Picture 1: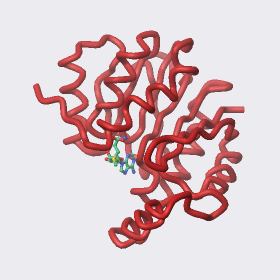
Picture 2: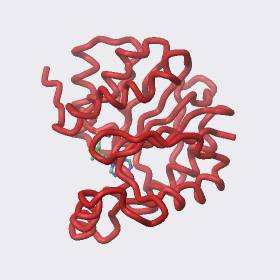
Picture 3: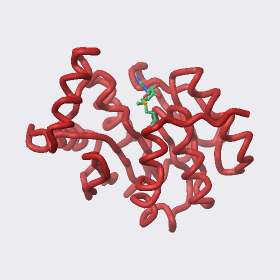
Picture 4: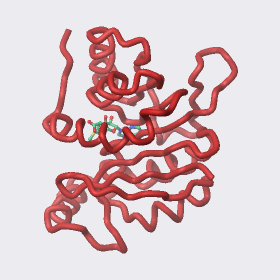
Length: 207
Ligand SMILES: C[S@@+](CC[C@H](N)C(=O)[O-])C[C@H]1O[C@@H](n2cnc3c(N)ncnc32)[C@H](O)[C@@H]1O
């Protein structure tokens, strides 16, 4: 077994778990994670919140193999096998209950994905979340963001330049832009929480 981690994951898993705790400690149901990467977060969340079922997804097969390593090592009944889900696929959908009638999701999680993908990924996430979440369900997004088209720190500005050099379609998103798109998906931004290293936790709720 080889439970892989990233340096960022080592730093942010605990703060993110604590940011989610007020909502997740009393929640039940199904949680879809988009762009789950190596699976470190899904493993930590499934451990911390045993009443929730976590469904980690990622389009990258290497990442899915790592997620499944975590799953086999920890043997947590509420950490489900990794599935492939690409937000750029047309009309993607997700059924939490394999074969049974589709259950609406209690929550969706997307950590450090929106700035390293085209804007279509952000739009797809926000619009689909409105269809997949139960009423008042949570869409939790973590990462670096701009506020009123302004970077919140010089390091975020530098990071944005670096990202756009890697791919002109990447870059930090503006919260106002997210809110505007979210409204089309019947989602409302209910909370912004400052996180370490100039990141933010964004809490959107299904109206
Ligand atoms: C920087 S990694 C973050 C991984 C993990 N969430 C974390 O914080 O450790 C970005 C992830 O987004 C995934 N990703 C990229 N494009 C995507 C897309 N179109 N749809 C879904 N996931 C995508 C990548 O495969 C990768 O695992």
